[in-house]
Amino acid sequence: MKNFDFGRYACSCGLVAVMLAGCGGLRQPFDSVQGDVNGAPPVTQSAVKTPTGSAYRVLYNFGSYATDGRIPEGSLINLKDTLYGTTLSGGSGCYASGGCGTVFAITTSGEETVLHNFSGSTDGALPYAGLVNVSGVLYGTTGGGASSGGTVFSITPSGTENVLHDFKGTPDGFDPQAALIGVGGTLYGTTAYGGSDGQGTVFSITVSGGETVLHNFGGMGTHGSYPEASLLQVNGRLFGTTYKGVPGERGTVFEITRSGNGHVAHVFIGTSKDGSFPRAGLIDVDGTLYGTTSGGGRGNCEGCGNHEHYGTIFAITPAGKERLLYKFQGYPKDGAVPDGELLYAGGIFYGTTESGGANCAISHGCGTIFSITRSGSEKVLYSFLPRDGAHPVSGLIDVNGRLYGTTPNGGTHDEGTVYSLSQ
Image 1: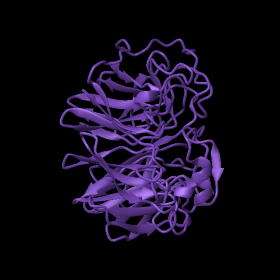
Image 2 (image 1 turned 120 degrees about the vertical axis):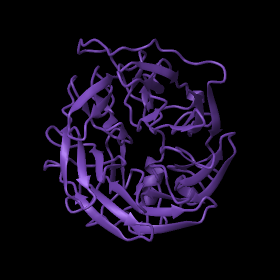
Image 3 (image 1 turned 135 degrees about the vertical axis):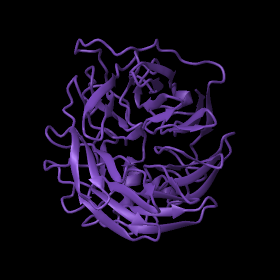
Image 4 (image 1 turned 60 degrees about the horizontal axis):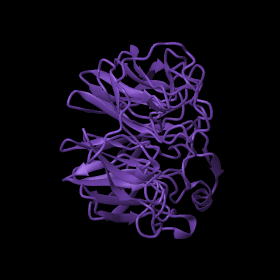
């Protein structure tokens, strides 16, 4: 049984068909967001400004169950100026259940093609994460599958799909929610649940399907629990985040060797001085790691589930020395709940927040696209409106100086969008 209990979906489902019928809906808007209660001065921030004209552009509106897909949650990847991604639901693979999800391609001019419709059984369902390119073949993860524990799959740019591994829960893990990374021809990833202690794993898998569990998470043990994010390889070591951990169950940054030996680099405590509940992976910029936490920092984010504050951006050395780069302030000042991985381009970080921004007062903000310097000066580049897309949870990619991303909600049919924004 999969529990959507971390502020993402408020339901619990058993069989894939039931999960799709009961959980394939929209993210729930936050109930209420109050102002800062910590009294701490903000990090330098430019005034909120929504660009006009051609700066922001919707490339595609999802919305037809049987023909294209709905609710894209994962980040896009670029392969020869064509973008590839996944939708959590929709498609023709199991239409009666709302669709089991798709893999799609889209040009930068907005022409979309479905490459694969997931069936929910042997080939999986509910792909949360985006794809990774290894030597011209795309690899990804899903829920569902023959054992209902999720899959690792490959797909060619022309749409030929193959299941490499079917997760069974124990001992190999359950519910991979993060994108894979490729290191030297081997793929590495995480499962949010399963393994020997039921609280997630780190695994490796060859492109021919040979899977190995490198580490089992144990919650209140030493390395945290429930990893939802992609890994990062730095000098032969893998770094990642867990959504929960010790003490206080507010998440960790961990390090693990490719042979499976690991330790915690940082434990989040969730106060105004720290973040909590990291859902995104890390990036490496000149030997320092940067990431986001979906909670912690400033404010009192009531109605946000476990996100008791608005979220943070942090920097951490591989040795574990952490500092906060920015604390979000929520609607209508800036963003709140940054779930996606950061992008570093041209000396600037770019990212998204699921909530906050200057628009959508009823739901306390439909989310933002932001930039931030390495010294902590943050600027909102765009505040989403429902017609443009809403509540982005994925990171951004840079294609020829323009940013591209997805929203799981909003757009013409309220089923998500692919968008672009000039830097």
